Image (cartoon, rainbow, N blue to C red; front, side):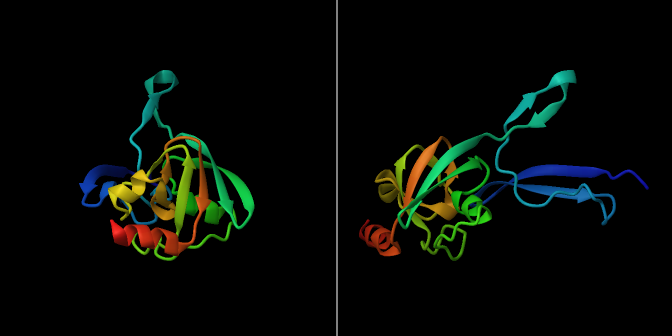
Length: 155
């Protein structure tokens, strides 16, 4: 079997931090990755080789009277990790636009620069789970969609 050659370029894309373009020398390359890579954090390992490092944070999600604790990497949204863990949380577009996955940030910090919330609403501690990447251990409470919409429409 021929060796698989992989070329990668990280390019800026409007609305996203970066996109990764991968090109292999043949279509059936088993090493081709898919999906965006959000972080550019690297650390040196033995032998001078570089490895990709993504930190995970403890995220407590309060929803319908229950608290769920997940370890979520910085490059994954809270909503995506929650769905993967089997939680049934409100959502629709998964793009930070429809506002059907609102939450109140009780503690900690998230990066939601890809979402559509106004700065005023984010400063009040509101977040969209589909566009929120944990930057620290945090605690969030899922809130009714109407609560967020009333704030977003006022500001």
